Length: 250
Image 1 (cartoon, one colour):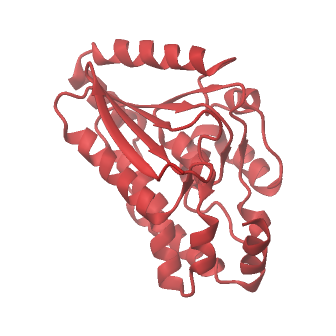
Image 2 (spheres, one colour; image 1 turned 60 degrees about the vertical axis):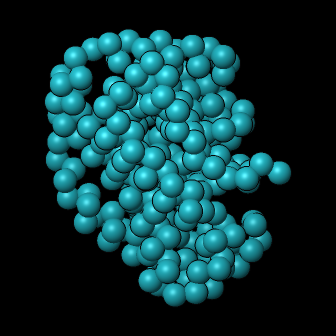
Image 3 (cartoon, helix red, strand yellow; image 1 turned 90 degrees about the vertical axis):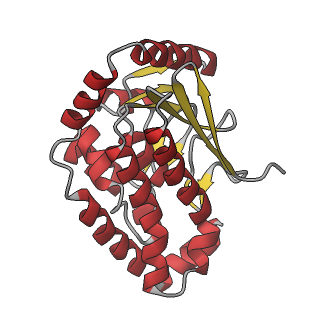
């Protein structure tokens, strides 16, 4: 079995951050920490003009939080620390001075939807349906809500949150603003991502940096807000309802 990893490569001024976990690209704490650090490294690398965020494998983009780790949480502080991992990655992406392109090749659940929403421009395949399943397991998409609502609006976010057991199609996601384009195959997706990244990397980096600031105006309070949201999730994950549900789905 291939071990979890976060891999960084630079190809002609394009920084590629790739994460992987053998369990459908789920996100345990160590992967979240490595992903946050990878974004910081790419942000500081002067040879990198634009960043691509992708996951390994050809099926699921990201299955969200690691259920195995959630089950093991036995106090609120540990719970908050776990969900802070998602908060820290989203804030790292938000504050990164370089544009981040998302490459979503397959299904995306929970925290993975938050990662896609935190990119500056997201491309996907027709198989990249999304689901916010958190309410169905006794918690809620509290940490990722600001990023998702910013992209698709409160009403669509509310719909996905309440209808927590439904996968929404890639076309629905595109129509609501999270995906910019949807492609039939991963090969077409990769070609589009490559050409966009190549084009952006040739633009004035100062102009890109200033536009990134404009895109994320009004989000400085997320530094505190997402930590507060992590505390809510960290407390709810201790409930008997959540523990029983997680064991059933693990």
